[in-house]
Length: 47
Image (cartoon, one colour):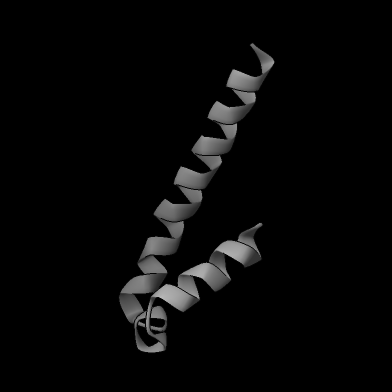
């Protein structure tokens, strides 16, 4: 799942932007948002 989304992201954005220093600072928030979505999905699927 993560690899598919990364390949999709790689196709959309140029390689120069992927290795941009600011990209590293975005990894944290993106993982946090992804984790939050998983938690919400789990809560909704249980009810």
